[in-house]
Amino acid sequence: MPHDNELKPDMPIEYISNLSIDAEQWAILEPLVQSASSSVKILNQLLTVETESSAIFTLGKV
Image 1 (cartoon, rainbow, N blue to C red):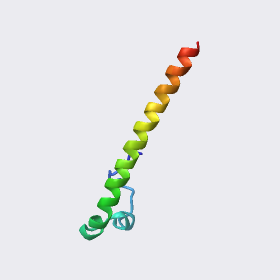
Image 2 (tube, rainbow, N blue to C red):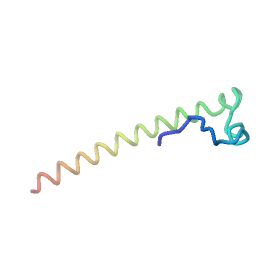
Image 3 (cartoon, one colour):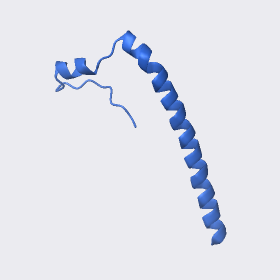
């Protein structure tokens, strides 16, 4: 899922500051982000292989 990191002129400053994290919080979150990213990449590879296998099987039946 893409993230929109652009500031918009109509965004209230309070909203932006609520979304901010500091270095200490990032130090805690970074390993979680990296492990989640790895899991998503692995799942994507599995689903891609499964989809391609299904397509090949379906074409073979035609």
